[in-house]
Length: 207
Image (cartoon, rainbow, N blue to C red; front, side, top):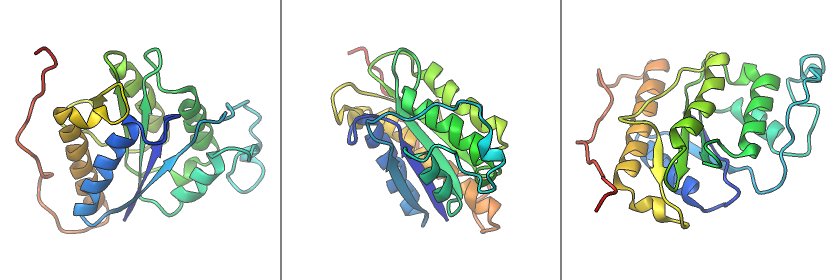
């Protein structure tokens, strides 16, 4: 089994990547491989509603100059998807929104029925709004949504600071545990009746 993780941050090794790496390392403990794709810091086209992807016979977007078709092709060999993004004005990055909308519209058959989750990272606020925005499209293409102990949010401003958010990192690990459990159930692999859980380790930011 394999999970595809998308880093929607313009910063390759920023805090979004910290959160996704935490998930990937936890998935590995369950014997599940993963791949993190960084979509880069160049423009990603928005969908123009031309619907050529519905008639070209290959389920790919007509625009082939950004990561969209690469992700669609990779999902053929993956069993689940996680999209991560920093928070810009209470929203995911424009690049990741453009990517998500186009890849699900053009290549939806490669995504349907596969578990999905969203992850957002912020300095202070707006993470829940961005998190909800990323999750809504999954429901439009019949992707079961994987949860954690809390919304999948981590906090940090400077590069690497999210690793200091102990509750945020625990939330990522529990998300990975829940993803592994769901995949095992889907693939008929014997597992526990409930996903593995860690004792809650809350972190409060008022010192």
